[in-house]
Image (cartoon, rainbow, N blue to C red):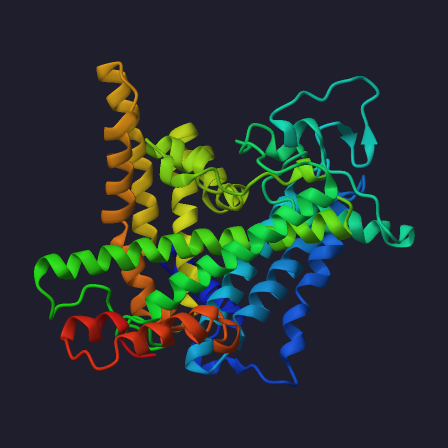
Amino acid sequence: MWLRIYLICHCIVHDVFRALVPQPHQRIPISETNILYLLFPFLPLIYMGYLARRPDTFTLRLLLLPLVVAVAVGTYFRFMWTEPHHNIYNWGQALLAEAISAKAIDFAWRKEGMLKIDEVRPGVARKSDAVKANGDAHAKPVTSDPAVPALSWLYDALDVIISNRGLGWKFGVGIHVPRQERSLRRKSFLFATFISLVGNYLIFDLLESFIKLVPDVGTPHGGTIFRAELPFLFRYALSTAIHAATGSCILAAFKLVYDLITIFAVLLLGSSPSAWPPVMDHPWQSDSLHIFWSKRWHQILRETFFIFGGFFGGIVAGRIGMLFGTFIGSGLYHEFAAYALGRGFDTFVPLFFALQAPLLLCEKAWYKYTGYRVGGLYGRLWVYFCMLILGQPLSDSWHRRGLGGGLMIPLSLSPVRQFIIPSIRRSLNGRDTDILEFIVGTT
C-alpha cells in the first residue's frame, strides 16, 4: 500500500514538474511575437511585493504564492532561446525564475509582512528611537521619495523587491556591510557608480573575450577546460587560468548589474546612497573560508539560499543543518539554472557548494583544537586552494555545457574584440608558432 502511495505521489510530482519544466525539445522557441511574455512574471511579483508592504495581507499572500512561482518557473523554463550562442539566456532566465520564486516565498511566509528596521507594521514606524546601527546602511534605512506620488505603491513594491541583502530591513539585520568608499552626496555617488559600471563592463568584456579564445571552451557547444593534448603542467596552468577568469568574470558581472540597480534605485526610486554599499568586500583578500563566504563574497543571494535549503536544514538539525542546508540550497540553485542549458543535470555543481559546509567545520575544528583561527598567509593559501583548485570541476561543468560560448556582449559592443584582439593579431602576423596560435586562437 505504501509503495502504491509513493508511486502515485511520484507520478503527480513528476507530471507537475514537467508541466512547468518541459523537456528541451518540447519548449517554445522565443520569437518576436512572444518575447514580451518574458516580462509577465514580474507583474504578480510586483503585486506580491505591494502586499508584503501592506498590513493584514498574510492570507492573500499565501494564496497568491503558488501562482507567482508557477508563472515564473512555467514562463522562463517553457520559452527557450534556440540559437546556440543564445543558450546562455536560458541559463539567465532560469536564475531569474528561481530568484523570483525565492522572493515570493519570502514575501508570503512572513505573517507581519516585510518590515524595515524602524517599523512595527508595514509603513508604521516606532515612536521611540529603537533603530540600532548595524553598519551605515542599517543606520540609515532605505527611503523613497517618488517623483510621481500617485505611483508610491509601485515605488514601495520595487523598493522591497530590489533589496536583496535587506539593508535597512529586518530580514537583513546582522548581515555584513562592506565599508562605503564613495561619497554619499547624491551627485558624486551617482557619478562614482557610473565610473564603476564602466570599469566593470570593460573588465567583464576582457575576461569573457579571453575565455572565448580557448578552443572548444569558447564555443556554444562547449568543451572541457582540461585540455588532454597538453602536457600536465600546461594543462592545469590553462585550466587554472580559465577557472580564475570565470570567477573574476562572475565577480565583475555582479558588480556591473549591482551598479545598474544602484543607479536605478538612487536616481529613480529616491533611495539613499548609504543604502547601497559595495556588493563585494575585496574577496581576493580573504584569509579564511568563513571570512570569504560571510563577509568578502557578495551576500545578494543569502536569503535565497536560506529559503531553498537553510530553513529546512535548520528545522532538521539546528545550526549545523542550517549551514549544510544553505550551501546545498546554493548548489541546487546554481545547477537547476544550468539545467536550462539543455545538457542535463551535473552533480559536480551541487557537490562543490555542499563541500563548503564541512570545509567550514574543519576551520572551526582547527580553532577548537589549536586555539588559533585560520588566517594570515596560510589562511589565504587555504582559501585559494579551496577556490582555485577544488573549484575547477565547477567551471568545467559549466563550460562543458557551453556557458563560455554564450553571447554575453555583442561584438559591436565589445572594445576588446573590436580593437584589442585585432591589434594583437596584426602585431603577431607572420609568426608561425603553435604557442602563439593557441594563445590568440580564433573567434
